[in-house]
Image (cartoon, rainbow, N blue to C red):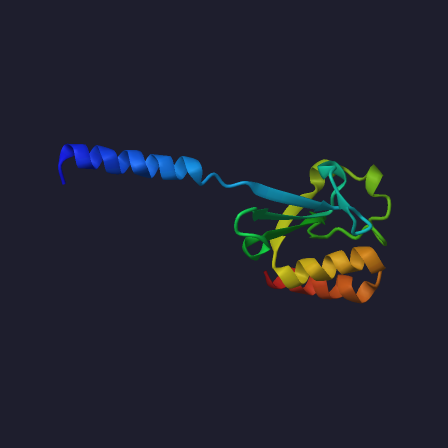
Length: 121
């Protein structure tokens, strides 16, 4: 490979990298399981590359005191809680789906399943 060929190859690679910019989509869920734009009020979120779709998604749920945040029971007064103490935990899709279903329906069964699945991660 000559020096000109090498420079052409490097230029082509740089152009390919610039044209393949990834756009990360973030979807936030509030305490009622509804999609929201306000990250400060979010309890769960999903992040994925726009080009690849949700099959490449990463799922996160807020934790408080080392457990999943429970806005319908023990953590009911979420607005008075210290937000700096919240942590985000990466979870799998089934745990995330169960948690969002709990937020929407307030059925404790989904929360229990999600809590157990989050411990396995």
